[in-house]
Image (cartoon, rainbow, N blue to C red):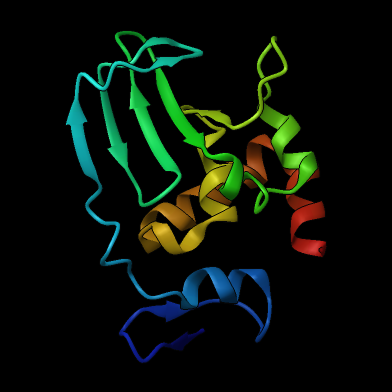
Length: 140
């Protein structure tokens, strides 16, 4: 474990995924996210009541009952196919990641948009909920 220049702690061997996730500086441009009320967007969970923008192409929607991230087609290319299929909806739509667990996929694949605490929480969820995909991801 080493301290980074930005005061955070880097964990893991040099060049490892864990090291890359913990070495990233805390985002300034995308945190806190810009939030809008009543975005008039339909999600897999119903009509959105609010949307929090985590920079271009990444939006967290909240509905009356649930919510999650929508990843634009441009950013979706950063998520490996086997992780895109981990949270496809019945209609086959990729790019939607629910807020209970699948959000972790978004965070580990686009980590620079999230604070260290969210990145570490995402790692724990990936290890526990998606262990096979996590092993494949860290081995890539």
